[in-house]
View: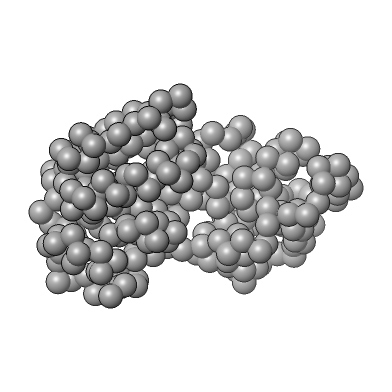
Length: 292
């Protein structure tokens, strides 16, 4: 009888917990999609606030007044405010590039916005079977990502040729030798590499000159001439967060940071043909979208 009472008390406490979704900017597509995926999958009441147009003082006052038990922060801005003003609360997060830069504690759970490096490499190997060397430009912010790629690449018979940059030197880097001596390039979400559009354009120009495909993580790189985009599925990320919160009612163990379950694969056939790169006939079964 006592056990039943304790269980019912626990369930009532869980149901009474307030969930707040903080969206960094609901007009940004990836944030909007994650929120929609979450809203359709969560089985408990929740509130939503979009902080895009709010001042810091307004956000602080709102969070203190609302004082939710559980927060789902969509985007880095939302996470930073929640972590700053209500750090004692349980915070879930998603849609943040390079989340390892954030301040974390035991009460933090989330979905990485980067796919597992092995998934990237398996897709590359499945589509471009002759590729055996891949160049990666990284900085201190993405060194762990590069090392993860290097470790998983060895399992697939791929060599990662890495090149480290820093804030002071990146604008003067040529990248000519790197591109020349590799068969392809992977673009990481590195804040130093992506700090200047001219640097990115320079890299893609070199890759085109040497007829080397570039693989990236976001659709915007199609405009630069990326051959393959492997990105996360944003609604699925929202559903994953909902599942993590729903799982609390079932007293299940939750892995703190998970990789995204959904994947979008965009194959730029037009660019690949222009570069003269061989690719697998199974591309139609692998790709979510093919650009002719």
